[in-house]
Image (cartoon, rainbow, N blue to C red; front, side):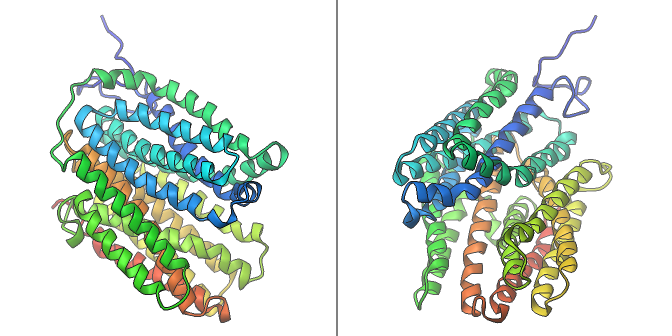
Length: 462
């Protein structure tokens, strides 16, 4: 006589699922994928329609704040969800994150003034930051470790696919109906995704809570607030012209590093082998890749004369390559260690971004830039899911939330800081004059990518 195992139920060796789409996990997988997909879609959609929104709400002067407020809030949400998950498990933080995210969507959708819209964006960042951390802990609690590369590979695809459909779809909705419905539409989809993951939430609610060993919630939130403000300060320094730009940016960077220390595993600032090196590597990957992504279409538009839509196609190349790499790494045999996969990804990323620097310097063929970005995207797709897997392999039930939050914080802070300093370097080198600014900004990104290689060698536990 046999009995069915509930969806998302804790599993023993005999009943362990062998697929992320098996009967025990299928709806959890579908719901988690949908939630991450929708968060990424919303981010890219807003980027596309933000010029329309700022004109409609007469808020051009607050254009950048609509983005920086979301980033700042996401760091706070990550810390809150990490602390909460370690205390009670991920079910309650997951429900709260979905609720806050939907409220933010509704506030933004109903906004009739830029100030109200920014409040909505802040709530969206708070919810999305908490959501990704809570979902990582869900994976740790419900998925066997052998399936972690596959589920994180799927999560990576959930971030990449919206880059293919999000911008054009949001543009059509904004032009043919109203930009308000870009937000309202996502609300209904989040409700559907929440319904899919509900069985897993019920199982998680019945699991015993554990007591986290990390710093108190209040202190962690204060440090998260400081990090958020410092990141915004770096961004302001990157946009400011004049003698104060560099001192402001470096001063904010020092503050950010000090505030990050209690939010990351001990030894992160000295790149200690194991978990600390894994967290730092995630930040380097995000810093090098996303700072390159900012300037690559700009380079093709200004220096090669491509129209904006054609220059943007190279990002599609990287997105498809990222998704392909994510799928491939999930099919590698278990005999290939996580550390080896991460090193391969780091090498590919370095070659791909260095190719962009060389292309900008020597004005090489567009095809060389496209092939290089294909290689860089593959490196990200191969390594990103394994970094998430490594973090959970280093974590216990008492610090899964803290470590997942640290991974997400390193990701967000690394990208934001690199983009800001890329702007400083771009301006200091002369900007558009003879393309020197592009060479400098892409050179900085290449240095960050190459720096990831020795760090990748330190993620191994032995």
